[in-house]
Length: 274
Ligand code: CA
Image (cartoon, rainbow, N blue to C red; front, side, top):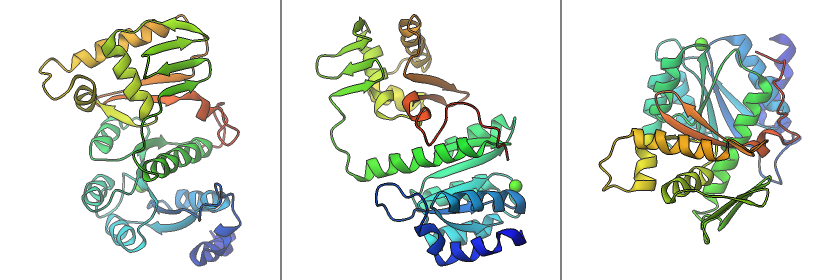
């Protein structure tokens, strides 16, 4: 802890962060780290500062609320197991007050926590022990999404292009390496919606609302069936540039795999587990 003392001071003053790797001229993003375990907190702070973020800390649930309200951070890393007030409670309360993205840290195997964490409004989660590389990639992805959404709703791109894949919303034609992939209308709409919201878990309810509309009274399993059909239609292609992940108990998330392959976030699993 002593070893990191000087970094601590730099972080508080915000000077150290300025020389970090900042995305295209943006000012340093401020991240609130909520974690009661000192060594994890220190490791997170050390690495976040190194990446150019300004870091604030909280050790308990009540402290998290106080700091979040005071600092108004750009992102909150929230451990679920906290003294005094659980991370779930903190998440629930903060969600009612601010739209700050929340990245939840949860114990490995705590499936219930994961699911509950997301349904109470967390943006993403990472299970402990986690890879710093993965955590940093998630943070970058969340902040980028926020930037994009702040840039205005903007029309959804007419054409999604990703690796050898393209989805044209005008002509409603989907291609892989030039070859047309024939999707039924709802399969197309579902894939189109997921592509427009990459990296975010979409509940079945939200997908039904978006694709089938509020007048749909069918079964939520309809979503599962359509996702299965979409997967089947792309099964034959190697190196698909996106992946639709089933998030147990919640819904689905589409990841653009180009992000994972960018230099800042190596696709290979990292060894730097915390
Ligand atoms: Ca903890």
